[in-house]
Length: 240
Ligand SMILES: O=C(O)CCC(=O)C(=O)O
Ligand SMILES: [Fe+2]
View 1 (spheres, rainbow, N blue to C red):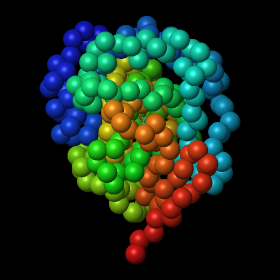
View 2 (cartoon, rainbow, N blue to C red):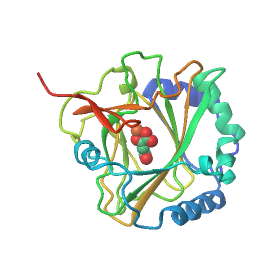
View 3 (cartoon, rainbow, N blue to C red):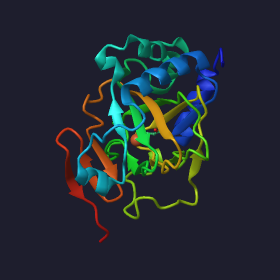
View 4 (cartoon, rainbow, N blue to C red):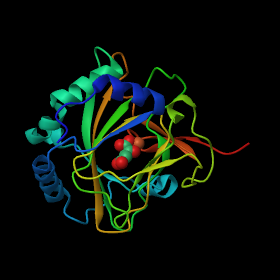
């Protein structure tokens, strides 16, 4: 386990690239405990949570679960980790706050997630930040690699185009058990299809001071903006 982090250097790297990978951040024992609870909750083949229109249009097949909201205190251990808190503070500054902890489950044969930004990028200062932990290895056999475009948190609106296009400058992340991935909400990112078994990731979302709490309500895809609260497409995005 990574006992001490070079917090200042990591924060600088985050702001340069719009994402950060810290391997061996969390103990395998803790990850095993989380994974067991997650599988207990989902079973290995749960039903979809989102409606049909969303699943079809967004090419996103993920089932969310909010364990802390259901009283699973064990999930506080990562949240309260002093190294994670110090790193978050170094990146976001005083007054940052936690939004929620969301576990995402994808079954075998599902599409993963299409290219998106978690929130509208029009104001560069208004954003969410993802602190993703992986409680089991992502492997090439399982699929579900997370793909990011470095520096895209400074590029503004995600371009319109095919929802699973490959970009020349994309970077493919294959996080192993215990890895922390921090991702700026404006960074262009997607998740590859899940070809084997199932895929699990858990996101401790947070925001800088003053960010509206519903910041992640509207997500930007290459073909639409979607509002999760009301399950509706709020804007169709079509090339001129
Ligand atoms: O599960 C992942 O690796 C990324 C998920 C994602 O897009 C997000 O949490 O915003
Ligand atoms: Fe996302």
